[in-house]
Length: 157
Image 1 (cartoon, rainbow, N blue to C red):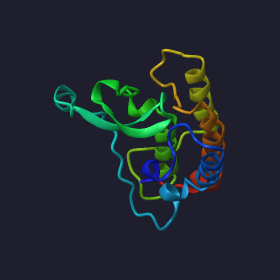
Image 2 (tube, helix red, strand yellow; image 1 turned 180 degrees about the vertical axis):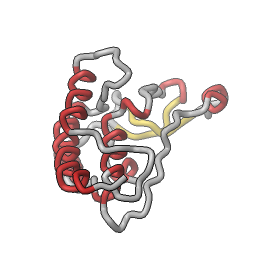
Image 3 (tube, rainbow, N blue to C red; image 1 turned 90 degrees about the vertical axis):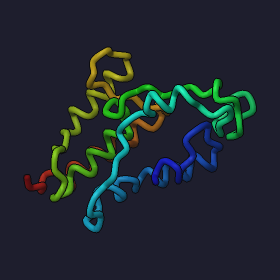
Image 4 (cartoon, rainbow, N blue to C red; image 1 turned 60 degrees about the vertical axis):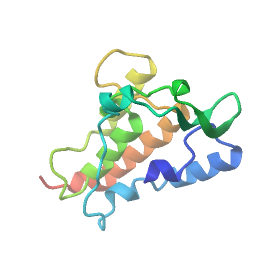
């Protein structure tokens, strides 16, 4: 829901302003006390779907600076595993601050920030975090720390 609600590609100045404003409260979708659960789609496109692609797909085209129908062969798949994607991990972190979430423990801000740094230097460690838009990392790191401080310290197992 959050991904389709915000500009994800090259952003105009106005889109960047709105994106940053929305990101400042993004954690609410995952950590608010009224949210009973969070659904995650952590798996990449199944191999069978990659073998039988459509001939045309709506994607962002750098050449035209537009989101438009393009040949499927132009699609560059993001093969970064879910738990190496900075925003995805931040969302899991925000959700893990909830009292009723099981299977995940909140990560300390220092650990989260170190994983981002390792991703920035291109470490081959499986625990790195990467961002499609590097400029998003600073705000996400700040929010992860704020939510951790506000909520994780009171979380019960």
